[in-house]
Amino acid sequence: MANTTRRIVVSGATGKQGGALISSLLSTPSQPFEIYALTRNKTSKSAIALSSKPNVFVIEGNFDNPSAVFRQVDKPWGFFSVTNPMNAKKEEAQGKAMTKAAVDAGVKHIVFTATDRGKNSDEDATPVPHFASKFEIEKDIVEKSKLNGGTWTFLRPVAFYENLSNDFLGKGFISMWRLNGNQNKLKLISTKDIGKVAAEAFLKADQAQYKNKAIALAGDEISLDEAAKVFKEETGSTIPETFSFVGKGLKFALHEQLGIMFNWFKTDGFGVDAKQCKETYPFLKDFRAWLRTESAWKK
Image (cartoon, rainbow, N blue to C red; front, side, top):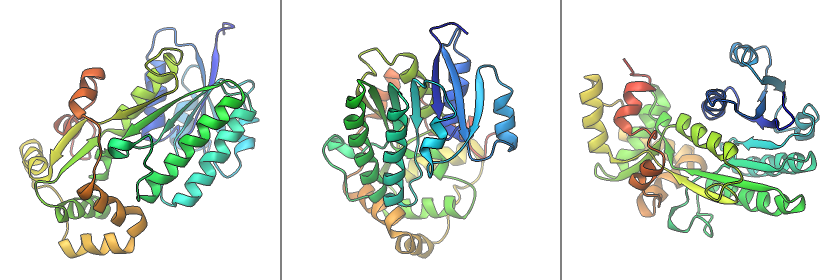
């Protein structure tokens, strides 16, 4: 490898964001990275598939022992951080610990997937716990990066298309959306598209567009009625959902993870302009394109 090669650690490497990031980098001619793909299980089918790719090295570890992750990489330059939102307090603690381990190891550029928090994303953590945890991780990355002269890029996506899955939780998601009203518009994005933007954030880390910048991302803004119409046109079926009382039950049972968030969708909502995003990143998929190419209903 040339002396200009930079080493990056990719968390969630076998997931959709991390996987799309790695694929995007590998498809870039003369990409300047050695990619250290972090996985919990090096012997999994997806991890083994990754290890067969050029310039990809699979490492085993998790966010509970971050220093052990970075001990496996000599002089890492970059780190892609994507955290688990199911427990906001744990997410914040683990995210901050991984940042510390990355900075202590000498990482110079961190790309972190946070979330769009409406019109005041830079100042308002919002009442949504797993939005607030990412807000705190963002601030921590800024402070810790100053310690070694490092830089950062924050990706702030909206809700994921992948929440519309053909299973119980996917049907529940639609039912909770309907509780906000059939005309309530929701902004959505493909997780794979987030990974593609992350690749650009590493490839162009020194450019003004990405250096110490937060980038809000959305692929579409659509009401439930509009989504149901598109779904019918593309699949020939009605959009899958469950009873309204199940949606209410999910909001109650998973109040911290889902209830507060769906209430916020109705009262505040994401602030990013989906049309402007697509002007900057034409590859961002709208709902119809996602259904056709990535969803469980793709043909």
